[in-house]
Structure formats: structure tokens, C-alpha cells
Length: 250
Ligand code: 6PG
Image 1 (cartoon, rainbow, N blue to C red):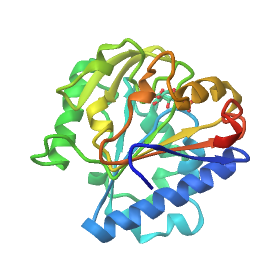
Image 2: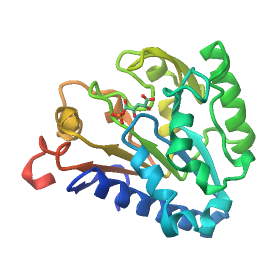
Image 3: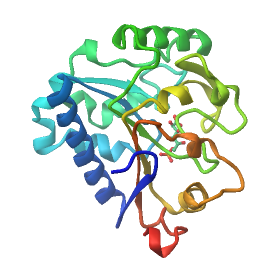
Image 4: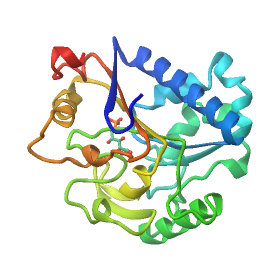
């Protein structure tokens, strides 16, 4: 796969998308473990990836020896307690991660229970720095991302300060649905990944996905700025979300 150019795969529905995404996560995970003995992955928030987390925690995937070597992070988190239904950590954990018997020190969640998002962002950056010791930017083997209808990804919203952050690895953000304070990985971190995989499902995403993948969009939405210089950009979409793409891209 040539880095930089988006690689698009379209599936009949969300279930097929989740299964293919699980296979891709396992494939990249096994390769990372072969190459360097570990697999550092940042999970996406929101609802689309929950079927993927369920698929990873089912059948032979759940029994893979890979999980002993995985470090799990989150691309963004809402500043709510982990048991809150809005918690990206909490929903991913319940969807399946808890069944993978990950070592506790390999699960690097944002402390959503922290009162102040800025403080939570600093704590999370310290957690990242304790894993990516001495790195100028952390390099994830894989970053999973969702796509908002306004073109946001993680918690990098159009026109936000967090989107323009050039120095820090994490930032506090405030927008989105639910409109709660958030912590997000910053664009330079996403763009230092070895691979990013966008998971896009449902007809509500058809317009934004089409505008994201057209040659010269009217507005460089945040998700379009995710283009790792030394990494792969993949879009896994279901047919409903891909309805706005030209036939050549389907
Ligand atoms: C969040 C997510 C966010 C999400 C998109 C798509 O915390 O809200 O990280 O970026 O991925 O909003 O959400 P859905 O998958 O629920 O449509």
C-alpha cells in the first residue's frame, strides 16, 4: 500500500466492516509484534468501533497470543467517569476489551474522572511519554479513528485550538456530541502513526466521507488533515456511508 494515499474498502454493512477491521487490527498487530515485540494501538471513541471491539473479543481473535503484547490507548476521551455511558474507555471495555485479559499496565486510559480537562490532558501526555520514552512524537502502530458528520475525528473539531496544536501530544477540547469537555491526541501524533484506520458507517456519513475523499474539497475538514507522512491511511466504510463516492471509488 502506498503511504499517503487513502486506501478505501467498502463493505455491505457494519457487521462485515467490523469483521474486516478486526482482521486488519490482528494482521497489523501480529506484524508489529514480529518486528518489535509490541503493538501500540490507539482506539477510536464513539459508537461505530464498538462492533469491532466485540469482534476482537470473540472466537479465535480473543484467544490470540497477540494481546499479551498490546498496549491500548485512546484517541480521545470524554471527561466523565469510566462508568459513565459517554466514556469511550467504558464503552470499549464493556464491548469486549475486558474479555481480552489485557495486563492492567498495558491499558492506558485518559483519566476521565479528572475534574479539569487540561489537567487530564497533561496526565495523559505523561502516560504516553512513559510508554514512548524519549520520542519526539509517539509512533502508534495503528490509530483507529471515527468520523463525525462535521468532519471531526478524535476530538479534533473544525476551528478548534486543539486542531491547531503543534507542540503537545494531547489537548483539551470542548465540542461534539455529547458536548462535554474532552481530551484528544493532537494532529501531529495522528500524523506520526504507522497506520490510521477510519471506520465509517451509516448514511449520515455519506456526505462528509464523499467531501473528505474528493480531489479538492471546499473545506479541509479535520479528518482530511490526517495524512501520516510515513504511514498508511485506510477507510473502511459500509455501503451506506460510501453512497456519495464516485463509482470508481466504490
Ligand atoms: C468521540 C469520538 C468521535 C467519533 C465520531 C464518530 O469521542 O466522540 O472519538 O471522534 O469517532 O464522532 O462517532 P460515531 O462512530 O458514534 O458516529
